[in-house]
Length: 370
Ligand code: SF4
Image: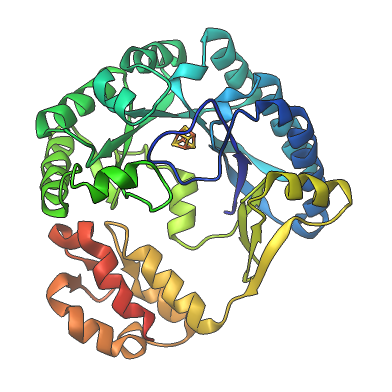
């Protein structure tokens, strides 16, 4: 089933590695922005009346920086405008330095049933270095306030002066908070971020070191009962993120807010990244869309393959044949030949071998030449 996404672009400050669409110091825009998000939800609703949604995701930015009334307001508006499954997975991304017991109680009351918490590291020295506005202890407090709820932690590897012991302790710390899901991302030093200077100065661990950290962490997580189901995502059985699965299966989704993307009816829509422009468009009854692409059959095939090969289960060959009426091995003959050492397949599926999943980008690129 399709999913709904709401982008909340406000942050308390800018982390040194961040290139997401987020606006530190603009929380004063919250009321005007959320009024526009509500209006966008209403604008889109008529063309989506026949769809039922089984996941909702508040991402950012820092959704938890907002007063909780806006999150419950969004939930009310979504329920008014769309058909939402009674057992929908509803996730909110949280910066642990921006929540308290009352806020979490209000989220639960609004229907949030999954909490994705940005821990990044259990070392305060590292958190300070990368510009996070919270301490490790804030993470444990947030976990305690959430209680038995479904919790996920984001952690980062490849940071300056980070050792394998730091990463292992961070995993232990996340587990001590009772999480059942961990997203582990390798830092990508983007050119327009302050951390890129550290990268240029050779202060970040090199690619081979990060790949070793990743392998060690994967093995360690597995020993703790967390299976890798996608290159950066690990979960205890039954706690895989429904919202993310829908995305990797190339399911439909509808996004609201600045920089949000939508994919339905074989079209991909991208909203403007400019906060003022977003507000202006909505206030004048225009969609804030800056790109509207009708996808060709070739695009659809490549996207299906690219997304599926990021997952541990890989691509379902029978579904592929059913969807496109062609054979995957014929469509991608040369890419398969070139990468056969990295792939494994059966009659029903094909996937990247476990030991090469971390470097899937370099393999998947060959599948672009359909
Ligand atoms: S909290 Fe997240 S979105 Fe905000 S600046 Fe930090 S990394 Fe970026």
